Structures are given as structure tokens and as C-alpha cells.
Amino acid sequence: MSYQETEVKLYIPDHSAIEVHLNQLGAELTAPRVLEYNVRYENADETLTANGIVVRLRRDSRARLTYKEGGTVNNDVISRYEAEVEVSDFDTMDTLLDKLGYHRAMTYEKYRTTYELDNAEIVLDEMPYGNFVEIEGDADTIHSLLQQLDLDEATRYGASYTKLFERVKRHLGLTFRDLTFGNFEGIEVPTSAFDAD
Image 1 (cartoon, helix red, strand yellow):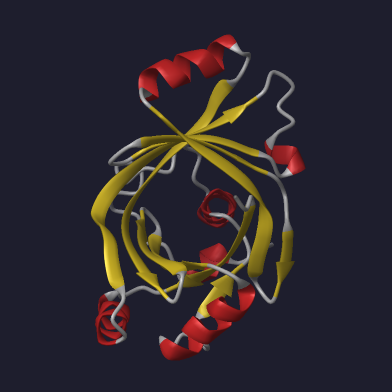
Image 2 (cartoon, one colour):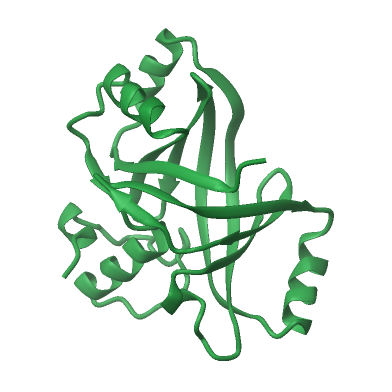
């Protein structure tokens, strides 16, 4: 089993053209649109995020615990260590993490639709602050799919969704902790809000 995650994140406000391309190319819809609920944790010393480490519990059609380390970014393609395990009970896993000394740092939501093509995973993500596409696979496949899907010129981000959230909060002067659809109701997010300071 490989514990290497390699992916690219692209800002795509309208997913409809991508879905047309995916269907034309024969991509397989492996998971229809589903709401994801994610919790990111910190340790008592608050050192995980500062060191690029992610401990995350996710609930969609199942529950999974994920650990990620900081990685490298090359042409906005991110490569890093990732290990993930499915768990039988989201709430019990949350309790176990609390008992182990972790606490909830933030929650975030997104709607995700998942396709597979050429041994790569293509996800259409609807975030509270905008729509994105992620392509995960080996670097050569990612570059090939960017061409096939006419995404070579799309805006790429080497930052995580939570890092983009921090940028949006700074640019717009937002003070809430959680990246939820309810918190972003009525808030317009310009593309410039995703830029690093």
C-alpha cells in the first residue's frame, strides 16, 4: 500500500463543463454528490498545524480517520505522506481522540462528487467559499488529465482548503472558526481572497 498522496487543486467556479468532459472521456462516477463533515484536531501544545500535520476525522457515506504530514509542492502539485483508515463509529472515534489528548481545532464542510479515470481520482468539490476540482494520482497522470480536461490554464492552489480558509478570513476580516455553509451564507468571496499575503 502506498502512503503517498499526490494531487492538484484547481479553482473551477462552474463544474458543469468538467462533468461533460468526464462523461465524454468515459470517467466512472464512483461516489455521487455527498455532504462531507470534517473535524481537524490539535494536540495540547497546538503544534500539529504549525508543523503541517493533519489529524482529521471525516464523515460522509462512511467514517475515516486520516493522518497527513507536510509535503512538497512542485508546480502546485502537492505530494505528501497520507495514511487513512475507515472507522466503524464517528462519534466513538471522536471520543477516543479526545481521551488521547487531541481537541477539535475546527470543522469544515463540503459537497463532493467523485470520478475515476486513468487510475486517478477526480473530485468536484463545492466548498462554502467556492468550487474546486482535485485530481489525485501520479504526477504524469495528473498532467495528462489536466490536458484532457482542458484545465491547463485553470488557477491552481498548492494550499489546503483550510489554508485557503485562513487566507479568506484574513482578506475578508472574518472571525468565525468553522468552514461551514451556514457561516458563509450571504458572503461573496472574490478570487483575490484566496491569494497569499
